[in-house]
Length: 116
Image 1 (cartoon, rainbow, N blue to C red):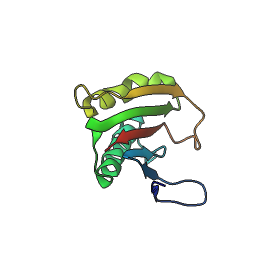
Image 2 (image 1 turned 135 degrees about the horizontal axis):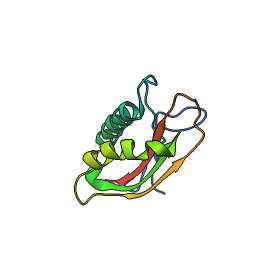
Image 3 (image 1 turned 90 degrees about the vertical axis):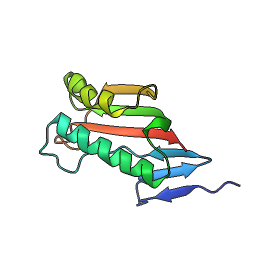
């Protein structure tokens, strides 16, 4: 049976799971919730970069992304950073929806699946 590697595990979730060369990141949010949607998105993308690097992969290996926005009208602002962050030709399958967030101060949350 193949080994499942879990990181950042608590009673509710693991912040990442690696299995058979796939890396599954939990939904990532910003730490500084005083930032606007662009600020929170920039922080989240930096956290994703770090998590992918920790698993020996990067944004050229993204498979899918799920993005939740508190207000879908912030989609264009978030996408400005998203498009610049993605390497050319490495766009993942993606969903982006409006959602009630865990805290009213969270404006965006992103969940990624990548391969090694």
